[in-house]
Image (cartoon, rainbow, N blue to C red; front, side, top):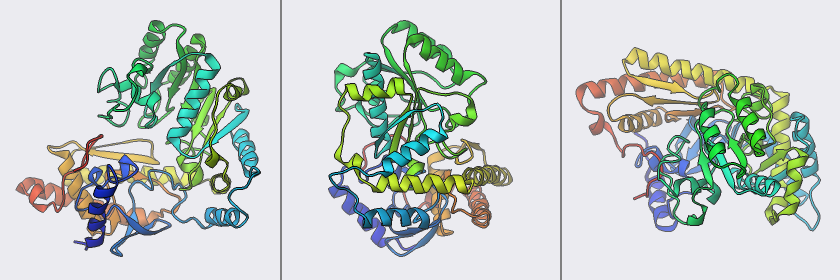
Length: 439
């Protein structure tokens, strides 16, 4: 058991001052285990994280929700950022790095001609949707997958509360989203082109864009992505790939480069800045120039740190074939999870592309089992949940030690289940799921 006095005290303060406790749902301690998950850090470097009480962990969990693809406090990226800061992060002129980054992104993606920037994934998706609507003069969006918090996306839940059920996070409340947007965001299932065909037939001439993640938990069926592209083209809609999660993990650039389908636009964030706020919307000139027909502008999109970080991150990623390491790590971990579960007699399901791996307990009360696993891994010196996002900083030695600890945790969970002691062994609450009010 680790001492977490300062960490838990900070969480109580946060509940009083910050609605929802954190700025990101996926970092809320109740998504792990309230009373067990430290929630706040004092320092992070490489694969190591220190909490407010001074406890040191090897982070084998969400890796800053996939933002730190190289690792925390990466010396090469930080050096580029420090240089940018020393030369001034903003002025009345624009930073040249944004041109260099645009050229690099278009070199990596030869189908793309032009680039616009934002600083977060959600706002970059909102920019892309605005450009698509301006380009087509239409309002409605057909989508597949998770695309952030903005009105255009949450509008899907105005007619029903389960429209987003199969798109990563269930129970997202559309409170505050104008009711007039009802019917403007229309979901279709992954590998289900017939659902998109139905949407396009029922909304003929009204769909501005078809937006989707090219890959997330499973691979696309043969021909699926190009079928969606074909349907979008026939409908006169802009075809958009959301690469915010998958981008720069299975290859240098968008995952679509390995999947054999080219969009009209693609959106990147997370991995391209290695923890520094940065996002990019790349696309064909015929679509991107519509950005000049509408108002898309923000002061902080012109600062220098984001582009400098992205240039350094992408250049290091390419020079070191980082994607190969990420894939190999995730493959080892998924195999290790399954072996540990089988040996312990636990039913688990492992999935996700290797650099974005996850497992789920397929036993009674899985959220309590998850919380107990988090607690036991914490006591072994790991930040670990049922999700593993690869970082270049992770070593195979760390993976081996992590899997040894996982084996012990799974054996302990199996024993606790057999003895009926799961809840008595838990220090905190069971893990949360979806979007719920924090108490």
